[in-house]
Length: 512
Image 1 (cartoon, one colour):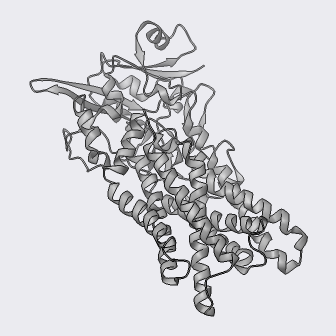
Image 2 (image 1 turned 60 degrees about the vertical axis):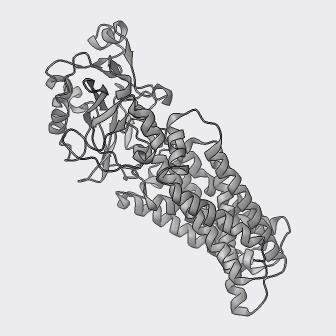
Image 3 (image 1 turned 90 degrees about the vertical axis):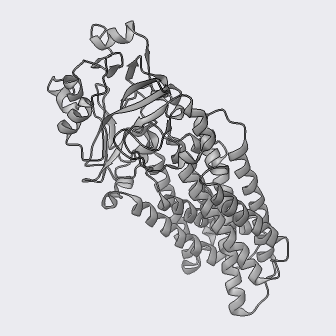
């Protein structure tokens, strides 16, 4: 048994009865929607046409929201319906990023994720979904796709149907008959500055003039619901603090393990303490960003192991344990454990840096985050952040003690910092300027390089984060404490700005 929908746009009159029935049946709060009707217009007056598209969860056979959910709050029933369990949800909003159809929302009353669940309670009672029975023209058809005698199967077999975003590979079970293609593809739509019955809040995508002009010839959106960008500054800050934590110990392990430095307090004591502090900040930001922080331990105690949120959570826990073990070695005088702990610590520091690339890749709705360079880029960013933080620690110690910035410990840090900054610049260029045919990714890149994020990118990410540190490092920062401080702070600030741009630009292109 496999339930699905067919929406026949030969019949749909755009009356919103399905939206109202869904809200009434499922007590959907104001401002949120499980199903909605979008209006677009095409052509030039007087030769204009209006088209409707009924949008909702597609109950995918390969649902990315199920895969990314860390606590099995989203699951597939035996009949193929993708349902949710609000009692399990921790409000991480990762499912909202994974869905290519923008079908999930956060219930403001419960702070948990919800969506169309095919009126599963009605299906159990042998009733049809509320939207089906209320449609005055029978434009919405539900049924069992595995039953060849069902009306749904007959329509799919006899009519030319389309689905939204087949390239996402989600195998959706919501089929459209004669829906206008521009209505189903948000990259072919643009806004006119307002809707039929409401004003339009300014959106970053509207700053992308090239995409605006290209889309204007196809369709104009004249009615839609609001779509929020779920992840804000806390996620950007989490990536930044995690980079510092992972990078500080990773560099210390390289310095000690490869014999660049021996018996130096910066790498043996200060680096793991810096890592520990910023690891705690990382975990704090992750919990703070949850809509239900009271349930955060569910990630560890009731995990869904396909989710990189779970895998990443355990990586951070193990990394923290290894940091404590390293700091405990001199106290317990267990010096024979130094080698294994240092090796494992370096491995888990690197894993802590890069696991987010796989988490963001599970967000199938956000194409910009899917670059194959991202894992390596996150590791390089960690090396930049770790070197910056350790350089500040060493400068502070130098000021307090009145000593000069010199010796193998400083030389290694200085050389590594230059190399990591150069590599970071190359990888940023690779992520943004490699040839790309995907329209959504191209629009996100244009937003960064020419649109609303361009000032932050060129002024912050490039000039502050790359050019100033490189110029300072090659112009005497090794001997000048003030210049070295400027270098470190500038690199950290630029990295934070880049992380924020990367997170926000990935969410700026509309999904529906």
